[in-house]
Amino acid sequence: DGVRTTRVASDPVIASVEQELLLAVHKFNSKPEKGISYLVNRKVLANTPEAVAQFLRSTGGLSKRRIGDYLGERHDFNIRVLSAYVSLFDFTGVRFVEAIRAFLSPFRLPGEAQKIDRIICEFSSRYCEQNEGIFASKDTAYVLGFSTIMLNTDAHSVQIKEKMTKAEFVRNNRGIDAGGDLPTALLEDVYDDIVNSEIRTGMDFSDLGESELMDWLQRGTVFKKYTHARVASDRYHQCRLWVCVDQLRYTNLASRNRKVKMVPLAMIED
Image 1 (cartoon, one colour):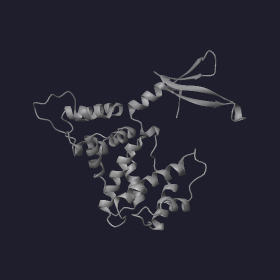
Image 2 (cartoon, one colour):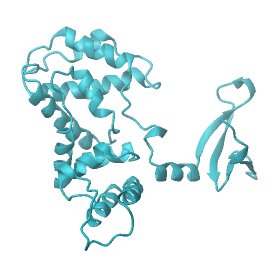
Image 3 (tube, one colour):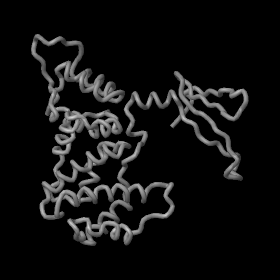
Image 4 (cartoon, helix red, strand yellow):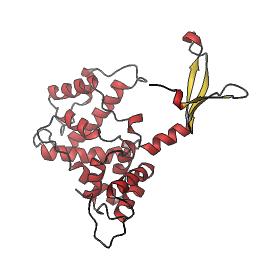
């Protein structure tokens, strides 16, 4: 891989490779380019797309959100890293829905459509390259990939009440294989797999790096606190919850004086 574990005698040494990796992870989770530049400058990471791709694929503690953002960037080096990153996956003989699930699981898709487009396009090329004959072209895998992501959102978003049916999913994907239809069994397999098990493409607390989590805890979150027994859906007030030093703090934003209540973190049990 591209992460080196030895140095030449002339190199300045201020920490072990493991310590520098920990610092780089912290920097990456704040701003990806900083973390990578740090390792390159410290001669721990080779300045090549292949080395950076391996770093993203195998280094623990990296923010999944930051990985997705970095892979989707339009800069030439990032595009080459994305290509090298996708090449680390072996999709040979793997069902399409299993392949896209395995590919998307290590990171979170960015919010920008153009970034998602670049990522899914690279995945589609890799899948078709390793599974000739399943689709007429990589464009089919590209369209089905987007359709799978849309189905995943539709099936598992609590905000969408009217869920897409299996028949609708099959109908929506007619004619995408160079004008022809994909086997119904293939589309139904994708539908069943996604509906039964969500692909986590959105943000989750487990995706946050340590620095991101600490920033979120310090800024806090605003939520709705309902009246006892939630008698009416419109009877609630806004509250803010956040962490400060060794205390969990709480305040009622609807209150005029906004008195802050505090609970020592040591008193909070699992």
